[in-house]
Image 1 (cartoon, rainbow, N blue to C red):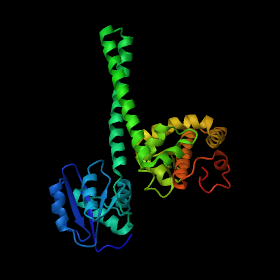
Image 2: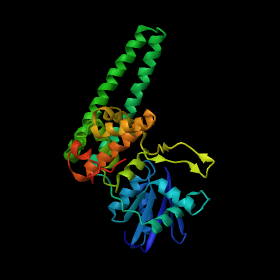
Image 3: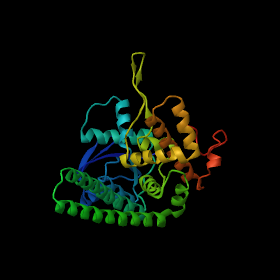
Image 4: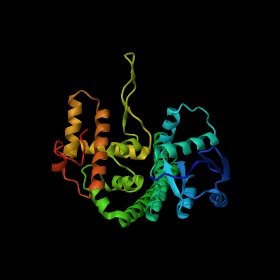
Length: 328
């Protein structure tokens, strides 16, 4: 990344955003188009604007600045937090956060951001709606079980079953629309990911949407950390030795989906099956072995996405010669 004459750290909330430059000059604006225009007037030439990922609140201003040809970096908040801790900073205010974000941008030289394609944005929005409906349907099914157990009125049971059918139909329609958009965006990538034993169309689609076609990752380790599947160790001296566990950061739907895929891959994917059984033979719990398989699947999907090739189980199983998929 080039050196900039000015770097602005932006701390964003639902209604406002605070801006601080490297010299500590502070200003705040409304998180609206009018506020964006007011902020733009203050931006000097040769500037970089750095902000955290904040759900959906950062998207509008990031897109606005990108359209105005102002360089933008959007950073994982965990990286900012660790940088904050490394410098032993304790103040927690919007102004202090914005200053730290600017300092991070100057020190770490983050990559520039660009928005997803329109089809990817639509796919993400539709997926969020579909996910809400899936959760709603699960609630209806739980309620149905309770009513049947209590021998409730037949009328109530019929109504809930009717709602479950309607919601299920809507979920299927939304899923078909997402698949249609993803195929239009990158049919080859979808086909290649589906060639991996253990990865079905729904999982492949979810991975493409969640990673924006794997564009923003430089390694499979980054991908694993992003989805919260990277193992963490808790150890200090000889007296503190906690168990290793995954971080559970990132998208929980992806973790849950990959865990379910790992169940199938541990039986049907040769590479994953070898890994799974080797860990069991070492005395590892089944859950630990399955998480390792989920990580393996992520490594394979990353390799396939970056290589542009379909999955070759015979090639991948030869780990000593493979340069695409690293060993676990």
